[in-house]
Amino acid sequence: SDLGLLGSLDKVGMTFGSVCWGRALQEVPAKTLLVLGLGLNAVCTLIFGLLPVWLSMYCCKILMGITQALLVVFGTCWVVLWAPEGMRTLWMGLGPASAALGTGLGMAITGYGTAHGLPYSFAYIVDFSILTGLWAILLSVPGLRLSIETGRPDHNATGGSVELQRPAGASADNRTVRQAA
Image 1: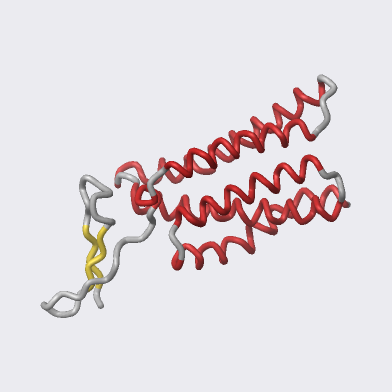
Image 2: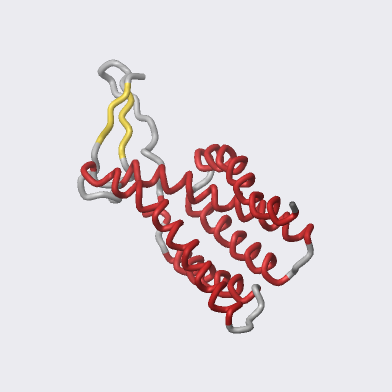
């Protein structure tokens, strides 16, 4: 039963984290949250692999789920805003596909490592290394490329409609969306 609970705690974290990240992404720049979330995920992954104490493993697994929820919420918002209209559903499908690919790769690394006498923590150290590399790459990405804001409302003089635009200079087509005020 302990292993079943441990295996499900990241899903519990994702469930609760999704609502929190959805709200946080409305208030804080996406890059700030992504850097924080991916960094925390990497650290929790390493601790989970190196410290086989039930309480720390439970806490790390919940935090890993909470930080992974950020990627799910952000990824969906980013694709809706930035994907080409004819490719949006394909891009939406790439998120779950990449998650499945990552899980499969992790299982393959774990299976290979344990079959060759390495401790299970080997896979978590590899995972931490990959996450840390991705985190370093994320630091170099301009915040504008990660923006999920559609711009600030701007009332025009012709009747109070609100124009929402992608951030200036972020897109070649820079589509405008009109909403009633």
